[in-house]
Image (cartoon, rainbow, N blue to C red):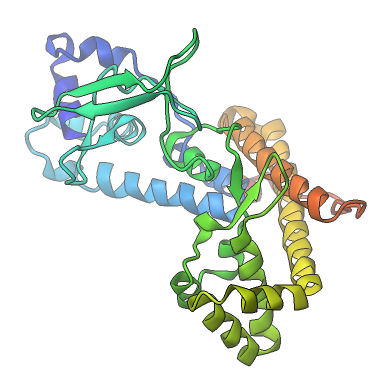
Amino acid sequence: MLKILVELEKGEESPYYHYFNGLPRFFANGPSMTPFCYRCIPPFAAKLCQKERVKLNHVAFGCKSRVQFLSEKTRGDSLLWEWAFQIVYTRSFEAPDGSGDLCLYPIGDMFNHATEANVAYEYDEAGNCYVQTTTDVAAGPLTMTYSDPTNPSYLLARYGFLDESSPASFCKLGVDWHITDELIHMGYSTSTLLFYKDTGEVSEQVWDVLLYKYLGEEDVGRQQEFYQAHMSGDYETKQSYHECYYEQTREKLLEHIDDILGELDGLSQKSAYGGAVAGDDHPRLPLILRHNDFVRATFMAVRGYYFPGEPYEEPSGSFSLSSKNAFFT
């Protein structure tokens, strides 16, 4: 980021002058959102977006006064620091030496994201970056994969776009119930608890976590038996538990789905109201609405697959606010 600021101070004398002029000025990711934006997205996505904002505050704003080799004008330009941060965190790659450092490769950072990438990056010993296609590509975009395609909320938080080609979405159980140490030992995390958009099915891990949580509420002894069966690879015992408690875990699944759907409906009302009243102040709301609609469609697909014929009743009534100032903070 400091390298970018140094080059910007050189103006037209910088070899990167035209590259910088071709980069975006508007961003829709987590660091760019307003507090109201965070209140319009589900808790998991909001947490990711706020974590990105914390990075901005620590990295971009935390060291301004200590960088004496930059001009006073540059050190005092908060918008410039924020822009430099955004360029680094939305366009960089991890260094090939395994150090964890971030590198920018001008022009090499122009490829868009896709679930099915058709280009790959390679580096030589000098750190030069080479890009080549991984398959025959017809006329159309060249793409790479930025991150886990089953986590569209992270792509929104980090990069500021919605990947509607994502095959799945996290089911949010890990957010609602928290991933305990035992669940971690069992190999589960939020990234393994998936709802599949196109088929409406859920990952096997979702059923395991639902059953594990149910047994913890009803019979801790049987919960530990289930845990030991899983850890020892006793598939038959695990399956017998799933068969015995299928209706109870199915009910837990429906409860979770309807809780999230109700939450999303309320958030959509809130963001739609915000767009109507102060849309110019919150230009990222349309993207947030699309994200919420994507998650909602995924949850409705799962509901339709496992609970066909059971109607979903949307929350009745609408919210009201006594003060616009109380709403837009």
